[in-house]
Length: 342
Image 1 (cartoon, rainbow, N blue to C red):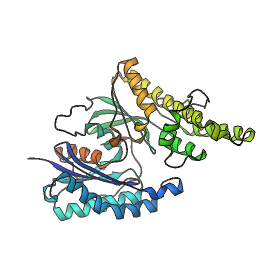
Image 2: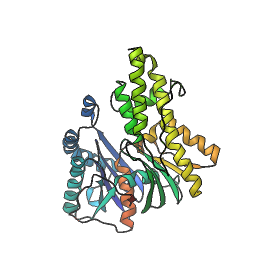
Image 3: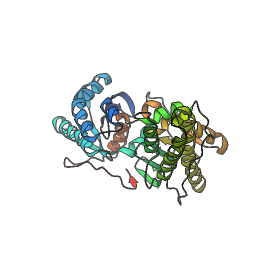
Image 4: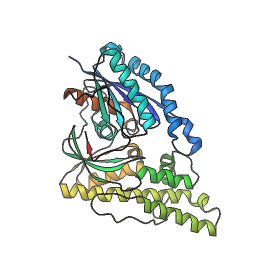
């Protein structure tokens, strides 16, 4: 008998729904929110209101594109956290209503675990690109920077994480002080491709173990701008390509240094990248370079699976369904994350 999972993702500012049947994606619909661009970042109250407007049409469209009737659904999987509480509440509440009306089980999903398991989404039954266990996954986004040891679908251990800011946050905030708009990461990436990565030197942290820190890099970047602007008010405009290239190179170097050390210490050659920052072309190139230099087998997601999407929620729900890991109706969202995923 087929297992058909409806996934719902609403952790930040994207409302998404997806249908996956027996591990194969039938649909993946995403509604993004442009309202935040004017504020230079996500406004939680506006995000939750937009989710309320989007969730019914997005879910309906996902079911329609999948070519199924809602009566065929085996379960509804929803992002329980981490994320913005107001946004999570919209998805959680909708999942509860759908679960009750169709009399199907609910499956709670950890957003970070879902990013990792995005590598297991099949677009055709013949897809066989998934990593083999155990593997390391570098999860990098606007809110998280982690190295995760993945032993199984339901056994993931965070062995390193940022102690302050995330890599994506560093990109966004540095882009903001340069006046590049929001979200800044894609703009930095585009301009970096036109600049010299060795034009400027920014400080790198010395954090023990596999943990990350990006607050010092942001401060170093800010001080560079401050000092140079005193001498030349047009400094940013004249040097924005080189600034972006140097910033990007520094962030990638920090990320890969710890990942390389973890892979060597644990003797793991299968390495994946996930999360919004995995769309960065410089980081993707670094993974391909490490594959050649260190014999890694690397797994880089399709661009459509790098950002927040419900297909990753649905595939995680599929594996949890097989293990009969259902959640009660009184489950509440959580905004923070623990060190154990799944």
